[in-house]
Image (cartoon, rainbow, N blue to C red; front, top):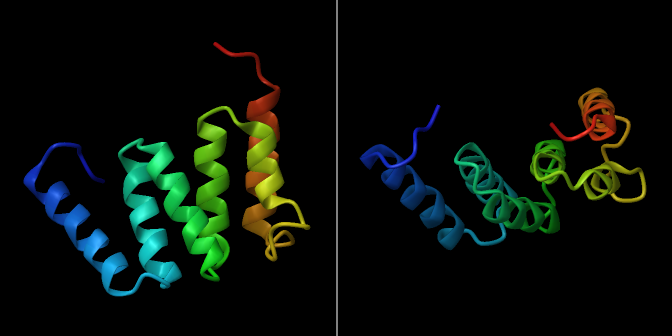
Length: 112
């Protein structure tokens, strides 16, 4: 797990950004950078990278990542829309269905 502010984290960030710069249409590079930002709770940056990854033809993990960061920001309807069958080619995937159920459950709970 990454801990913010360490030398290793900065090096990791530079490596992910370099991968995106070297291959700007690589869904994997954007997904990895999105994962990195998500771990640091930098949700706006993570959202952007997941959206680019999806636009570049990413797989199921980018859809899950995007929906997850939206849900973490209490943007429940947007998170569910990302996973909707009209938007997500992996909507029948078991992990996608599980995430949708989790988001619905969390979204139904009152704010603490």
